[in-house]
Each structure stands twice: as structure tokens, then as C-alpha cells.
Length: 195
Image (cartoon, rainbow, N blue to C red; front, side):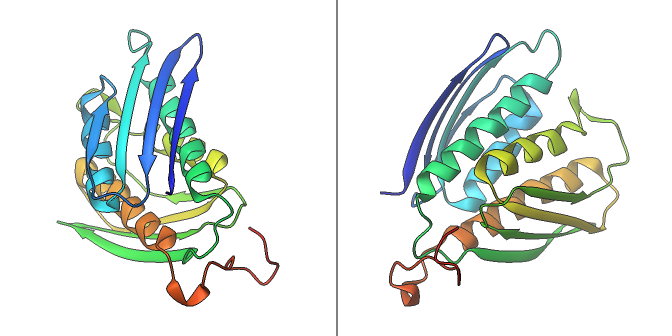
């Protein structure tokens, strides 16, 4: 079973993640940050992963620690659930429309952490959520999952739609890249024999 549970406790946050890569898109999300909860629900629905994410953080300061630590824990859970990555597709990409927004995203579950985030929002916040925290979440995710992730915004005007496209695209590429390719018969998808 490709699943993992991660618990992370610091002086700033308490995070609990349960992730099942072979789920049906069931999400139990509670971060006490409305917009981020919405994005993680979208992520769960479009990845078809089952995800329980609970965050208790110092939101009286701001949302930074809660969002970043959620990314750390989710990245650790993804890495653990993938194990040696035997049989996975490894690569995936998408060009995803969200109303006026068009978002390109590509992933390589390479074992190497890298984020290219070529995304521009036109407001500093969506509601009370700082738009720049999306990049912080993604940096934490790629560093801890050890994946390569690229985003390029091809069109967009509305900050909510732009960030929604980011999370939906992320979900879709991870879903495709973590899918099992039966032709590999469990082999690791690398000429080196390891990822």
C-alpha cells in the first residue's frame, strides 16, 4: 500500500498528514486558513489521493509557518509513500485552463529538489491569504519530497484563479507521475536503476 503518515511538531506548528496515493480523492483538511483549506481540498480532489491534513499553527502571527510546515510534512509523506519509486510513471506535465488563466506545470519525481515558479499574481492577497505563501509551500514540498517541479503561467488576470490553477495543475501532474506503469513491472524508471 502506497501510503504514509507524518507528524511534525515545532514551537510554531503541529502538523499531521495521512496520505494514500491510491485513494479516491477523499480529503479531510483543517489548517484554520480558509483559502489554503480550499486549495488543499482542490488538490485532493484532482490528485485522487486520500489526504488528511491537520495544522495547528501560530496564525496569530501570520500564516507563513502553518503553510510552510504543511508543505514540509506533505513532501515527507509523498517521499515515504513512493518508497523506491519502482513502477511509477515518474514524469508528467499539463497545460491547465482555469477561466482566463492558463497554467503549465511539469514534474519529475527525480530525487532532486528544484522549483521553477514563473507565476505572477496581481494582488498581494486573496482574502487574508498572502499570495507569496504558495511559493513557500511549493519550496517546502519539493525540498522534502525531492522532486523537480516547474510552473509557467501562460495567461491569467484573477489572483484566485491563478492560484487555483497552480494547485489543480500540481494535483494532476503528481497523479500522473505517481501512477503505476504496468509495462515497467515494478522496475525503477531510471537508466541508473535508482531515483
